Length: 452
Image (cartoon, rainbow, N blue to C red; front, side, top):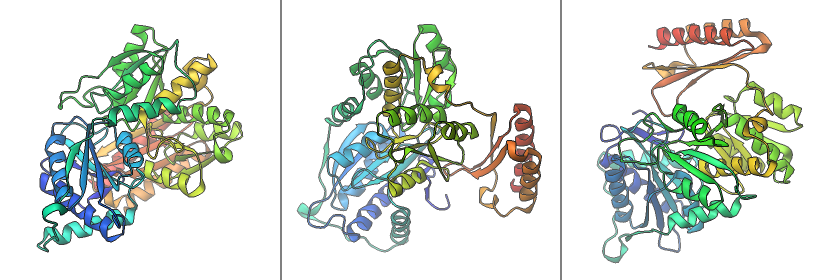
């Protein structure tokens, strides 16, 4: 698997790359690293462990719980809940560590492990590096120090986590959703119970699709990576809007009443104006990534708002927000972070806040999203290539230079190795969709030939 930790934890094919032994070993390593860092000093350590509905999450959860308890950490097992719920509970329960088992939007055979530090924040890169190094050291033979007797960790189910999280979501909403009809696509994932309950408690009339997880159907033709079913359902039921989550519900995309997609950039733009109106947009600034559509940047400038760009990955958006004290950030893919109310991207919270803006203004989602015009943007994923050579290939560099010269000031090119999958993403923006498509395809062909 190369370096174990990617941009969003450790991911791989469950029981092939991500085995029970790896899950157990990483959990023990995490406990030891945090203990050495002084996180557990003066008290008995506690961890919150949750998962999405994947079948493999059942045995991986057992391995993680066993590893933590064997290292002397008490475990609160919260069951199937969204990633942001695990982060929230880690914070409000004063736990020293949170662990989420999910591969987010990936297909069912994959799974992943994501660690949260005290307060519900993602672990710093240096801590992940240390955990990986300690894991490798002990995997090759160095014995662990193991507590015995009353020193071993205790495990119990924490069933209150569901209501605690839903109550938090309702409490931070600026207004109710009475009068709105909303279709929710839960991707047969971790929010299948949470999201419909939260929207209903907030006053919306709720229609659900993709809300019957069986352990095998997560993200299968539904959710934020497959919007076709949601678009059709919104039109069929005459809903005001639709909300789509991914498998672990840390992202949100939307659909307007006519069945048109509203992406993460547009959602950010709508929430930015709402938060500025409420006096909650600190520094009048929004943080987003280099993948954001150029139309988003132009809209923010026109509205008198500042736009800070980061590398791709919600962890880098979050780092910039925390460093500078900003309140709102996110990605085109639908990871939206409202830092006053969440420590990570929260798809259910984002959907609720978007619906709340529709309810408060009386405007349609299409009207609100019209604050920005999306410039044509083509994204091609090129699989089965050596993504580590993106920055060193001379042929690729020459092709990118030629493409940038052709596009001039009306477009841009971005090549990025995926942080979670073995592929390279080719993104091209241009004023004309056909030009963007042609340039992107040429670059994708060069990526395949140069790195394949």
